[in-house]
Length: 385
Image 1 (tube, helix red, strand yellow):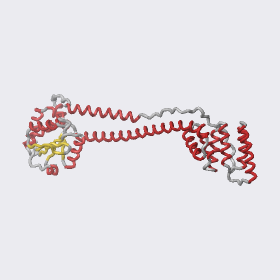
Image 2 (cartoon, one colour):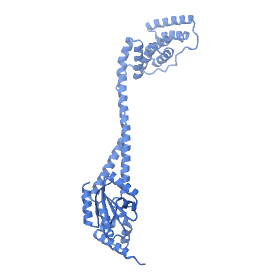
Image 3 (cartoon, one colour):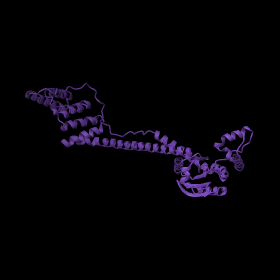
Image 4 (spheres, rainbow, N blue to C red):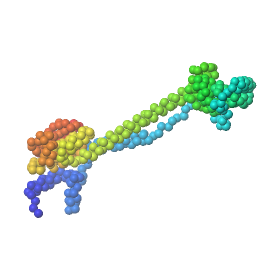
């Protein structure tokens, strides 16, 4: 089979390029040729070490990976809330007695029943003064059954339950008193005292403050002196950890943003094909590569060539070898017959022509196949990065 003389000349130029720079053979795009040579028993020179630019980039990537790992571990750490030092000296175990008798709020109460209920209440107050608390509860229960519409009767029985250290029963009576009369100062007072006995400091403080506003008395003031410090500690503790959880949530958002940014950088780097010449066939392709190069702050060399151009055939292997030598520079190649829109954009009138771009903007250019000038300009602009 005959081979065109032009093809033979190109092959000879390629072989000359391999002789002057054997590292070309390690270009991944020439893997098929390398395999063929080895099958013939050829001995290839060792693959050159990565240049300092590549080493630095590798170090940077390792640092990014390490930072990502640290952030991930930090994100996995849970916030362990510390204990709060509270004054629980008067806190009691919750009472679990059967529910006390409650009156029927739907019944109509006669004057005689109201009088009888008042008499039973008086007996209860006498019993309380004598320390007979169970008797007082019994008399107050009788009064409630006679007049279930009286908020004061429920609140008074609740006070007796407080003295018996039965806070749940007291809360039940206080709740009923407040349903009957939402402005019952004694209802709020009894419920606040009962909640304090259960260690419900914030709820107790709230009830006692309302009671104090409705009808202040000294007992409420004494109770608040005990309740408020504990309630404030709990509130400060809650605010502290709400702030910490908010900061943790913000850190998660920032971590995710960093992960996405790093993923975008990695995707960009993979698109730039370190150490290889990337063919460009349209302005769309060119814009993507220039954007990727700008994102990673890389110098870009845009080389315009043509298959029928003799000087291009001489400089093309050199361009390929320079791509291997400077793997962190983006080497782009445009055949003007295939990428006519790209060539028109840069007003190409002769080939080979080279444009040097940073952040998508032209910083230098040269025409012709002068190897020394090309490499000198590359070194010049690479050094200013």
